[in-house]
Each structure stands twice: as structure tokens, then as C-alpha cells.
Image (cartoon, rainbow, N blue to C red; front, side):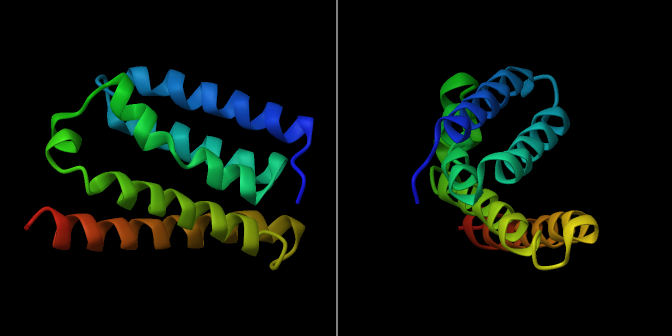
Length: 131
């Protein structure tokens, strides 16, 4: 698959939005998380699943911008968050067309959000943090 200029541009704009939103992380994570998830979903819709997977590196940029002491102490959380983002991106990318144009988007976002939450909840809360 060849990535075109439009896809690179959309991915770059969404990465800029993600990086900008990470400056508000100290204010509230309830602002940053939804903005990043929305940017991931919009990237999948307008640039494709591959570009959405590429954009899933936002936990690394978040650490460099607002270094979290928890992330510094437990670096195993980086891949967990990135894999959770990839799960969301893949669900939206694969299921959006599967369920039709109108019903496919809410269904794919819902399934992706639930799978991401279950994956991250089990892995981070029950496996990584207790050890």
C-alpha cells in the first residue's frame, strides 16, 4: 500500500492535535484521552488504518512532553497503551465498512472502545501494577 500526500497530511495534522492536547494532561486526563481517541478515529476514517496505527505512538510523545512519574517508574505501560490504541484503530478500520456506512461507525467505535478498555484494564490494573 502506497501512502499518498493526503494521508501524510491528515496524519501530521492529527499528530499535531495529539501533541497539543498533551499539554493539557496536567490539567485533566479526561481532556487528553478523548482528544487522542478522536484523533485516532478521524485518522482511520480520513487517512486509513495504516496511518492510524502509525499515530498510535502518542504515549511516547506524551512522556516527552509531560513526563509522568508513573510512566517513568513502570515503562511496561508504554506498549500497553500503544496496543490499546492499535486495538481501537483496528476495530474502527475493520468494522466500519463491515456494518454499513451509517451504522458501522458507532458500532465500530463502541466495540473498539470496549475492547481497548478491557485490554488495558486487565493488563495494566491486574497484571502490571500489582507486580
